[in-house]
Image (cartoon, rainbow, N blue to C red; front, side):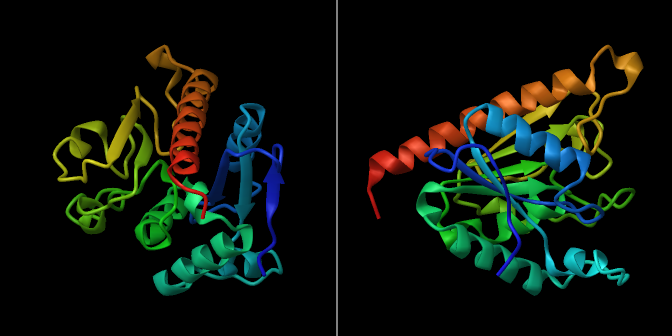
Length: 214
């Protein structure tokens, strides 16, 4: 059983589970900002950690788990939280990528990716998009336009599923942070992202609630 960190009203019909990125756990500044920001917008937000990050907390140096382990962790967490039909899943970078690999199978309400890692930095030929071409789950990807894991210009050339919508934040990096000279701020980009994610979760959860009660 995973250790879950929650924010927001548990009674809310708006639910989102977030997985962390490869380098930092569920208590990183990014994850905390989004969990708290979404909670303020009425979304019940659940965070968890993959096994390798749990091991790191005990002082054991450990690389990310194999994809099969990461995917199974997602399935276990969704089962623990319950009601996947009316729950959205997603996360930061790797957390969102792995969520995208199980979203259709779990039949979740929606998918939210915050900085999807389309390819390793400096290796645009190593795309991680094959499964995204046939993704059926309604998806919102929030991307920084200069993200080294996939710039806005690069993303335009990808053959992505029509179920995917991209929100591009001008001059944002992989964590959506813009440079000072751009005239944009991290606070404004985060607010824009949070508003969009909350609106997306609300829409997807309401659509599923009206569809049927499993």
